[in-house]
Length: 267
Image (cartoon, rainbow, N blue to C red):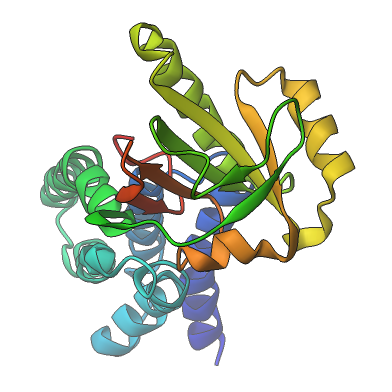
């Protein structure tokens, strides 16, 4: 029973490490794959001398983080299924290789492969999963303008390119995405007369026009600001969460949709 208890603890340890890392350090999915794999590897090395069925050891150590990763990440971003076999391979490497020199070499090789996958392959997977390239008429919408000028609508916004970014003041990925948008806007100064960046606060999560204005002023954001009461416009673009980014061309057609944000992607 003590052996099984130790194996269960060893399996929960990578899950705890990954949770703490994503909670307090970074939500970057490239880092999460690397941290998860290394954690499973180290937990397996710790338990390699435990006398128990090898298959049971692999399952108990790799299963907790794999199951959590599947339900929390892979179900939303199916392309990240690649993490699951890597967690199992890490458990096998840590448990099955007895020769110390061989284990060090194999472990370093595995970390190198996972590192290359994390920083060269994962960004494209995340970006492709969150992005939709389309050419369809924009739905009818009406969004309150919280600054100066007319409200934003599908009719009055013709003739200029519109970048609509639906956000929540409570949403950490939304805030991270805004930093990317600020950099993009600063690189397009030659086109200021042709496009508008509009932040649109939805009323989800208890946000109000007052909270949106305070959020906008505190961060000194160089964008127009709107408020989407009852999230009507947000829903009309078929978004279910925030951030939700839309690019509408001068003729009123949606050309680009992007739902969600992760620092792993090449935004």
